[in-house]
Image (cartoon, rainbow, N blue to C red; front, side, top):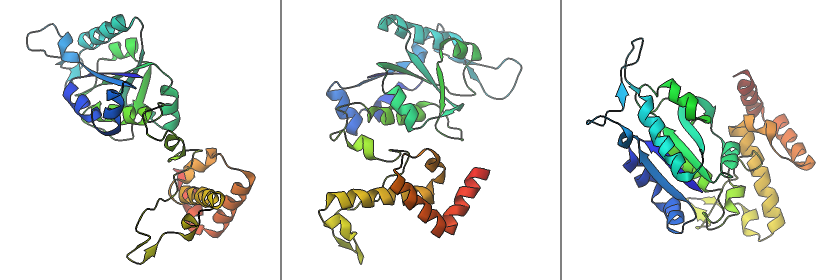
Length: 257
């Protein structure tokens, strides 16, 4: 997998992606990350990439030519026009399902805007996907891009030491992850659940699934609509709903919202 980030702050991208799991994966050649400085494609001596918006208004807008030229140079180098993800609060909210789809690509381009945004004309010409990390505004697209790169990278074989962990963490089967414990066995009077000390793998797995269902109902009941559950697990969920008035109220508020 090759990640290409079109940005005004390449050092921010490289510093953020060159450590920990991503850094090790890059060293092994499993994935690559390059930050392409949009300023390198300006034609003025001051490397200016923004200008006042037509029609007036506060702030500045990134100009189309340097963004287009940066992308076109990359496309010429790759011999194809790769998928371009534009980081914007107006985009579709990024989630695990989207990450799984994007992980199948060979090359992904992340376009990071700044100021009041980017000239709409170049967005229409090169962007294939507009993506958001939530309903809030950041100073630029670099942090969302790095978040998505991290999430997508975990799905690439060989990036994680234990590839199975990418399949059983939060949002697997549209459920939140079960609670985790480690040594010591007792901490400030709180004990690790007995089932986790039993060595009975089937019982442990059943307990974890029930905890995932319970936690999802309590914290993210909206996810349960598309959760992958067995008939027995659906019976367990129904029993939780019956006995948990707070959870039912949370589900109702979520549906209303």
